[in-house]
Length: 189
Length: 288
Image 1: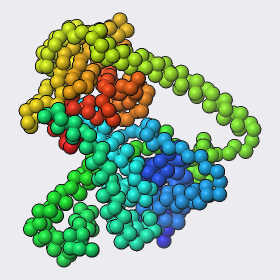
Image 2: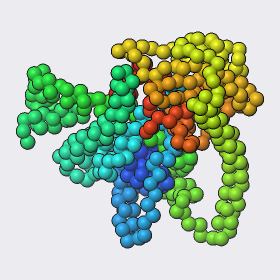
Image 3: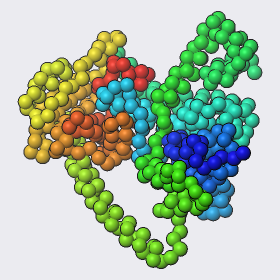
Image 4: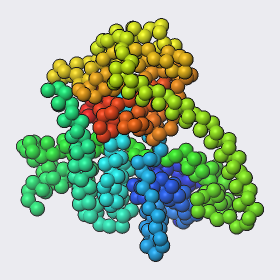
C-alpha cells in the first residue's frame, strides 16, 4: 500500500514543517547559503516526485533528510571530476533566527543572538561529519537509530562519533567564552 | 575502556534517552555515589541545553520557503501529473535552471531588471541612511574618546540619566537599571550622557566604561535613524545589524520607534558589550 496524494502525510511532505531543519542540515553540510538553498529545493522536488511511492508508515522527516544527504553526496561525487569553486560564506549568512526569549526585552534578544552566533561559529569549525551529527541529534532530536538510518552507518558509529563531536564542540565553545569569563574576572578584581 | 570511560559513554546515552533497563539502573545508582560523574553529567547537560536554546540553528529564508510552499500548493493540486508541475514550479528561477529558448531568456532578463529596479532602489536608499547613522555613531564615539564631546551629565545612575533626557529628545526611553554583581562589583560603569545632533534632531549619547574599554550607545528616533545592512540576525521581532567601521564594532537595531547604535572596540565579538546591560540579569549565564 502506497501513499495517496491527498492524505495528511502527503500534506506533511510538501508542507514546510521540516524546512528549517533541512535548511540547517544543508548549511552545515555545504557551508554555503546558495548551495544550501539549492539542496533544499532539490530535496523537495525529489520528495514530491517520489511521494506516491512513500508508505504511510514511513517517517517523513527521516526520508527528507536522507534524500537531502544523498543529493549532496551525489553532488560531491560529480565535483570530484569537475573544477571546484569553493565559496565559504557562512559568516555572512543572513538568516533569521525564528525564536525569541521569554520576554520582549530587546537586550535579552540581543544576548540570545550573540549566544547563537557563538554556537554557529563553533559548529562551523567542526569537521563535516561532526557538524551533521550534532545537527541531527541536538537540533533535530533524532534518535541514534534514526541518525544511523540517515548516515547509513551502524548505531555504534553514531554513538562514538557523537561523543567525539560533543567533546570537540565543548572545547571550542569553552575557548570562545574563556576570554569573556577572564575579562569579567579582571574587572571584578 | 576503563570503568570511568564506560560511565562517560553511558552518561551520554542517558542524556540522549538511549539508555534502558539494567544499564540505566546501574548508572543512576552510580551517579548517587560518584561526584565526578555527576559533574560530568551536568557539563554534558549544560552543553545540550545551550545547543537547545539556539534552535533552530538556521531559519530558511522567506523566498525559499515561499517557493516551496507555492510549489507544494493545496492538496487538490496533486492530480495525475503532480511531479512535472511541482518540479517546474520549484525549478523555475533556479540558479542552475536552463531556459531552452532565447525568448524565454530575454523575457526573464527583462523581468529581473524590472524587479531589481523596484526592489533595489529603496534598499539602496535605506542602506545609505543606515550607513549615515552608523557613521555618526562611530564619529561621535571617536570624538568622545578624544574629549571633543564632553558629557553633559556625569552619573553612574541609569535612573538619573534617563530623567535627564526627559523632554530633551523627541522620544521616550529608559536605560536599564544597574544591578549589583554577586561579588558586588559591576563589570561596567555608566559614565554619563549628552545630547548630540542627528539630522537636525536631538539624539542621546550614553557612554559606559568597562575597564579600559569605552562603549557608547547612540539613540535616535527611527524617523531620522535607520538600522539596516551589515550581517543581519533576526530574533523575534528584532533585527540586529552587525557592522565594523574603522576597527570598531557597531550593532544597530530598531524597536518601539527608536533606533540604537552600540559602538565598542572590544576585541573579538561584541559579546562583552552585552555586559553593559546584562552583566547580572537573568540571562547572565550566557557569559559563563
